[in-house]
Image (tube, rainbow, N blue to C red; front, side):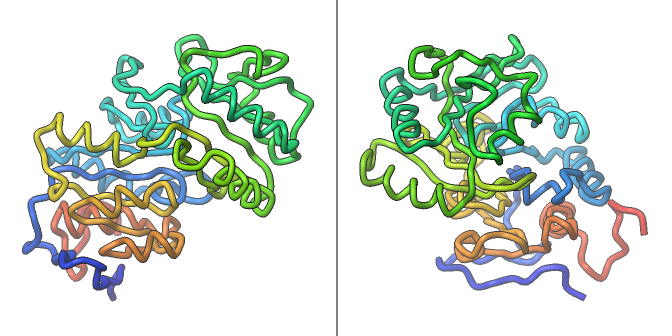
Length: 311
C-alpha cells in the first residue's frame, strides 16, 4: 500500500521514483506540523530514518519558525551539531557553539513602527531578540496584558522573557522580528490593515500556533525567508537547489518547497503548500518525513522490508 501520493507539479519538473531521481545531497525539514507530531514528539521511525541519512552523508537541515532555544532539544535528539535555520530564516545558528552565523536584525525605526502599530490596534507586541547566551529570547511590556492565548504562551516561556515596561521605549539591537499571538480571525483582519499601512517594505503573515491555541502574526524585514537562509547553506556546501529536498506544511515553507529540487508537502499541510509541492507524503502523525527519507534518500521501496524502523 502506498504511503504517499505523487502529484503532477505546476512546472515541468516531476518527483521521480527512487533509483531514477537526482542525487539529493541535503534535506531541509520544518519542525512543527512536519517533523514533529501534534504533541511535540518525534516518531521513532522518523528519528531512525534521519540518523541513517546522516550516516550516509546526507546533510539534514532543520528550518523552523521556532526560537533557537526551543529547537535545540530536537537537534540533540537527532544528534545534529550543525547549522540550523530558526525564526523563519532570520537567523542561522551554530548548534554546537551557539554562534549566530547569519542574521537579519530589524532596524530600530522599523521595529518601533511595528510595535506602535500593534499597540494602536490593542494587540500586545512580542519582541523576539537574539540574546540566547544571556538567557533572554523575548522582550515584553509586562506579564499582565494580552489576549488569553498570549498569556498562556507567556506562562510557558516566562523564564526567557525580559519585561521592560514599554517596548516602544526599550530597543534591543539584536531584535529579530515582532510577533503577536491571539485568535486567528482577529489577526487575519489585522494582517490586512498591516498590508494597507506598510505595504511592500514589510514581510508579514499569519500562522497557526501548532502547539497550542490561537495563531501568530509575524512581522519581519522583507527579503528574508527560510529559503533565503537555506540558499546560503546550499551555496556553502557546494550544492545546487536541484540536490535539495524541502519538506513542510505551512505558509512560511512555501518558498523553499517551490524552489527545491523536490518540494514535499505533508499530508496535513495547508492547501497552498500542497498546490506548490511536487510530492505529498503522509501526515506528521504518520511519520510522513520518514517516508520521504526512506524513498528518496535511503532508496527503500515500499515493498521492501523497512531497514530504518522496527517492524
